[in-house]
Length: 356
Ligand SMILES: NC(=O)c1ccc[n+]([C@@H]2O[C@H](COP(=O)([O-])OP(=O)(O)OC[C@H]3O[C@@H](n4cnc5c(N)ncnc54)[C@H](O)[C@@H]3O)[C@@H](O)[C@H]2O)c1
Image (cartoon, rainbow, N blue to C red; front, side, top):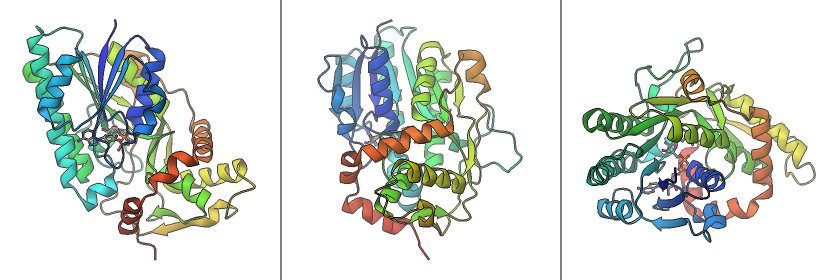
């Protein structure tokens, strides 16, 4: 089937990886990116695609109903892959308002516009609204709790996860109320190329290259389940092509690791990959514990059995392989990340981390 996709947030980290993935695997499909280019959006992430006939970039806000309606109609969109969001927990603690607006009101705006578009076109069966969400909606696990499954009750603890939970509920309701063919995915932490420098893995790589302290929250024993972004893209491919409308699929990497151990792994990789030009060696000497994030969830873990058994998807990249690919990418892409360390970025950094 020759799909026509609207990818919201396609200039962000996962969105741009997904657009590259899709254009490579399905070059006959048309891809339209709608992105507001907030601090986290970067058109340069898509530079290699701009010349393609089947690709279009539109700068705009998902809350702009008339723009969304006009794009759905003029581009004859049948599939929305919805990544656009305010995505950083730390920023949601400092300024929650933008999270409610984009994540809740923006998702509602897309759902309404897509519902109208689907109805006007006589409700085609192949239309899809893929809502890309997070495992953080499930709250925090104790050390021995079973991993999150699709039936785990929602218990969001941060303004970020609460706003994503709100959007998930709306997406679910549009299926149940209108039979709009929506699908939700809840994924664990992603890492890989094009991730904005303030997130843990790029922050660690970049600060090592600059010889700056590596902030680690609290005792460093918070556990996350890490997934290489390319594996997330292949999971979303499986969901768009084979997922059942109305269903939710959890996506995870089976890679639970404590933050402090993750940071140590990256330090060792950087020592090995950039031996001659590191300002501080061993890089572990830069590790600095900082005041914990308020309400910091202790552990996330994903049970990805459903997507494995029903859609045949499993991750293909191990954590050590993925970290090596990622460390090399940041090492070789100074020109991508250096301009992102702007005064705004420094301002956020100063507000967020309390070094004792
Ligand atoms: N990063 C992760 O580890 C992770 C894990 C699970 C789920 N998710 C989800 O995946 C999605 C993408 O995450 P990411 O890490 O790529 O985020 P990101 O912050 O890197 O990118 C978000 C993109 O959305 C755009 N955007 C923000 N507000 C917008 C608006 N109002 N209108 C249009 N565009 C807007 C930004 O400009 C940016 O390009 C999010 O919905 C997030 O909740 C992320």
